[in-house]
Length: 576
Image (cartoon, rainbow, N blue to C red; front, side, top):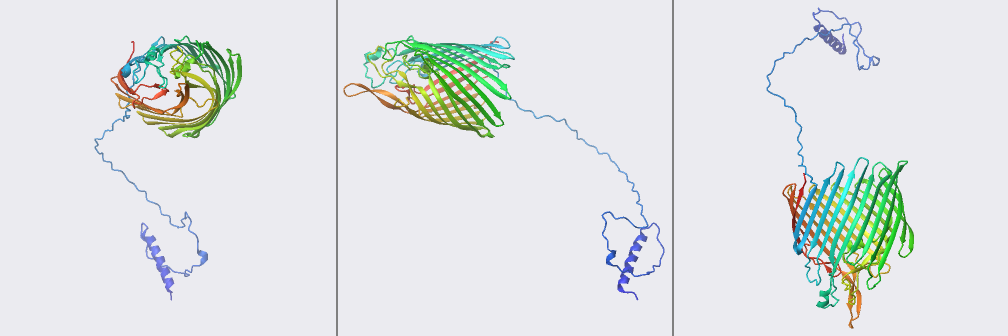
């Protein structure tokens, strides 16, 4: 008797063999299957399935080849591909540059502005230039008792040449300036008769001749020399000759540079202030400054020193100075944060010309001597906040011996000189230590709109004088430039100068003259301009100065003109 398991096994084998037989080409006949031994599986018969099983069947089945063909039917299409074209980039219209221009403007207070510039191409490498400028006013400041007109006319001629190995240029300059000592102190009680007898006019005359040479493939990098004569209508005369040269040599991939310089000055004044004797001065400065420039990845280090010899031939005095010339900067965060520091010094030549350009109301009775800046130490950081915003922060401390300070001259009504009524300035020297903090930020709002803001704060410590005369405690400025569109353009600047100290003459109860320290108020000066460009050659402009109308005093007892409006035109042209 067969067990149920045997029956199930027989059924399964029958099903498998039947399936095989059905798969044959020819059906098989009936077969009798005799089971000799019943199938009894054990654990030893178990095996793992191979990844690639091997067929152990005695009957191998051959695959029938499959034959197929693709029935292709053509499809009509109207699509025609077009050739690709590059996107056009709109180019800005190229501004034509002209070699010559002339500007003429007229304004309130009978102000006149005239400029002429011309560049003549002598050859492909040589050019000759002419520059003439004139700025004048007929005066008219309110409550001024003396004539306050001025004018400044300057002519500059230059010739330059450039080739593959060098370039050089020469320059001739002539200048005539007219100013008036119109700042009479209120405390000086002068009758109308005395005031009408005063001729406050001062004329300055200047002539200069100089040249510069630059060599591209030589250890001598640059060389320059310049001579200047400066005089006035009171028989003052000054001669100043400057020369300097720069040498550069590469040694072991390091740049060693050396600068040599000379500054020779001599001059005279017809007399001193309250002193009938002639004033003479003669100063010579010679120096050499070797330095080593070290570049290491983001580090820039300049190590140098200045060796200077100063000679006062008028007083038979000489001195030798050594000044540090060390600067360093490091790109700590690329262009975004660059800390820097420096320790420098110099012996600076003071001249009558420089004094008159900074303060044209000085008297022709000055004592001239150099300023010894023993050191100027500073630290700061500069960089970019964004791609369009740049900044520069700096703090410093300097020590100067014989620093020149402008100080109002006391009145001497017994003098016959027109500058001796307290309406001029002298120069005094003092040892000044200065602590300064400054900051600057520049913003390129876009390609057409730019802003700039800077400010500086100062703290002075004087050794001999009661105050650091006429030095401001603060300076600040805001600059704006705006290209409104292709035709219109505008600009503005705002300047602020803080409080300064000066000296003023006083009268006591018995009529004796004395002096006291006064404070000059800080002032703000707003200037703006607006222009329209008809074409590449012709444009018109209008500008205003001191638009806040503040009749402030840049120097004590010297008020400035009020609101000034000027309009004019500029024309550019070529001779061809």
